[in-house]
Image (tube, rainbow, N blue to C red):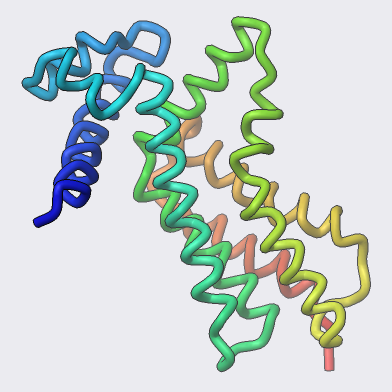
Length: 199
């Protein structure tokens, strides 16, 4: 196995254990030493893989958003379904992925609160992280309008609606601690059908 593959594997192993530390301690109270202790390695070894706790956190978000983007692009390539069904599937798959990654969502919300408490701008950080995903969703809406599958509408408002459903899923999963997202998936289907051109 190459050194790069081993390095990436080790980073993911560290990340898994670090997520538990973040959940247990909260973003603000986590230290590199606590993460190193949980991983059974020295701080010096941990610094080989991550510069600091923010670097580790950013790596986890990057990994997650990479999965989201791959899901969207895979569904978008499917030529067997129309654009309305593609949008519905994308949102459903994202909601499933959110449900599988509750720990990361909890840490992300904790981090956003930490940023806000320290006079930072969590909204701009979220926008920066979700820009590509939102752009792809908006381009799917445009494609649907051009194909006559989606009623003509303000694309930005449609993108905000779709993204709002994702935010709602995060809120329900992390803050309200809902066990299931089935109701939210039904809401997604209903919302997407509302924009579909009836033939």
